Length: 282
Image (cartoon, rainbow, N blue to C red; front, side):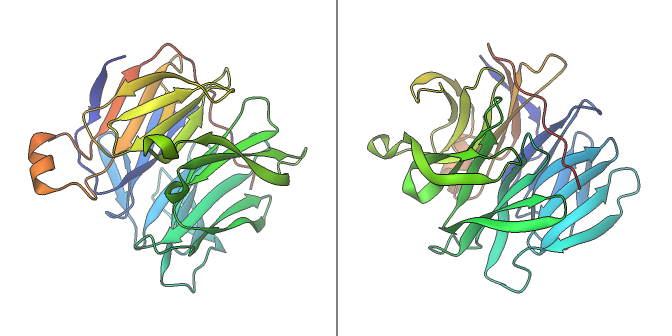
């Protein structure tokens, strides 16, 4: 499981990789650069952008600092759908992913990771509802292949939580601890679940993405040449390529010199198969 550079444009804060199943194409964001990226192309936005779901072949739902937007990949046109903490100048969007029921989960956080300024929301068929708050650094939003289980984290807690979902994808009952990484000093960042229900977690600061079974045991780790791995995604022709974004943010000049691929986006062939990303139903 050797990682290679997929795209050598270094992101200040790479995030939100999305393999579009109809286009066979990877998209990702540089949050601090306010850009949506794909190989050979990028689009600039007036606000921080961080996560997306696919609506159809040519349309993405994009989360930004101020709201949710339809984005046309052919024309570059943006249409505002709903505001998201638009009046709070202290916060921005962060991690997000579409769920099996066609909804879209999106987390927010303080621009400087101020304690308790963030929350996790769900957009579903025109409705935006807050699910969990307060949150300091929203991350690890992903979904088991069986449908009724969602995962998320507040990075500063060192824990990944799981919550049960009803038949429309809304949480029911209190979240439970799925992974407790505090004893190892690990920082859970973005995550994705493969077709067998294993959770692949970017561990910020640890140069890796780790695979945890449904029972919470670590089963494998994939090393990357960047300390701040930020979010994984499965893709490729057979869905066995693990992509991972990374960040320059928080990397000292000395560490940048020692690890010159920091901030780049990587790909590794793994012994696992991902789920196809779910379509967002607007």
